[in-house]
Length: 286
Length: 290
Image 1 (spheres, rainbow over the protein chains, first blue to last red):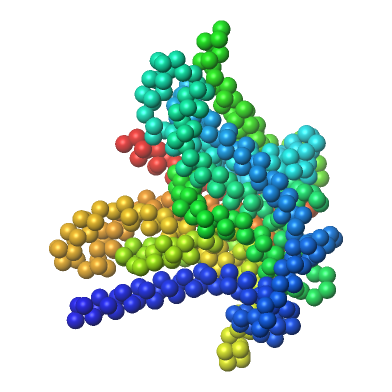
Image 2 (image 1 turned 180 degrees about the vertical axis):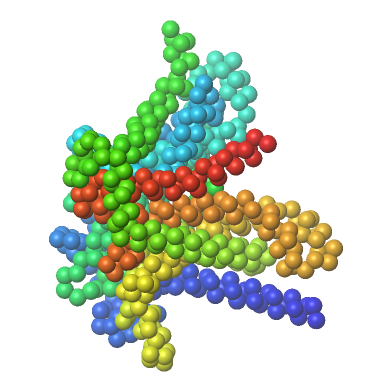
């Protein structure tokens, strides 16, 4: 009797788990099959039907000729805008975060804990409260609607998280290590370079993935601080979907959405473990 | 001299960050708060008018809709995400096969941007060609599902998409919490004759309290900041029926040249975050010291 109950329980658990897995996968599946159909088939068929003949024309159009507002060059230019924003912003914010974390964890000075608290708080502020003055500052610096300006914004507001990651990682390392190295005559940077950096690979991976995902997926800063020609892919995707020249092309919309999601999805599939670690570190302790 | 510089190095390294932080965070917050007490419209102007912008804000039906939506959205988003996340975590924790694959599936939406999520759900919920047509093709020809264009229901489509995106993350938090529980505790309870349900309800769930708190803080934080999802899924519509405060702020500050009202709404949002955050950080810091 009890073994039958057990088996019933197991079946129930697996049914639920698999059922939910299918629900979570459904939107991705729908996006994919829709992007491979032509518009006739979308109108006559339904959401989950497989395409009768696989058709990549929606992908081609989404990439290089769909209209995003008044421009009709597809997502390609905006994809590269995002790349140009993401790479420097991730690198700079990660490097600054590593140095900050090293100081805050191992070279504490009077007020350094308060500084850390003040930084931590910055992880939480709703960015709406800084949007207007930052727009003024960028205009004053002549950086409004530029890639450099957007990189700057992402660096400034990303440092809080990167510093937090590195500080929490380095704080677990006993301070005796630094003291011993100093007795041997090693300086601030030498200790960082020779002792701390070599053991930092995991936290670098976590931080880079976190920053990459955050900045690639950003929409708020993109829509406020970019102009025609510097818009990141999220903004272009939104424009593409809401541009209604002629009939709605759902297949192109879906292909465009997948293109916009692909880089972060790939990173997640390759390095999911580090992605989750960043999420929990950034969210729970943040 | 050299020695002195060497000793100052840590401070020098921190200096750029400290300056950027005080200018771009605390300075900017002060600037926005200040602006919310002026009658700025197109351009900032510094003649103070007291609480006029706040009065205007709360007399604005659009803002009141956005606030109502925020309560509805936050409440449902948190409750459903917690329920689904906890359920999936408990089941995943019971030695299931292919746990890694299942976890990967539950969590992948978190890697996608809200704009993509919004775009995808906008299509799935499309009245006419989306779920409605799917169910009609199955034989239920009278089936109607038009939440996306229904004033009263549009906000719930945002809940659906947001839950889809974030509940896997809650699952990951709970799973980490469950893995941290000593197995002997559970075994002891079962030797005492407690059923599995009772063990979970009376022993394991109470131990998950910190995870609940953490998840609630994270989820409410996501909810207050939600902007992209609304923008992509409903555009705040129909009309402004599914606006959230962040969308209101953006519209008034940047599209309508009503800086003062925009700043006031941003300050209210900040107060909302503080109301959740301060008690949480306070309790965290206290438990850290103990």
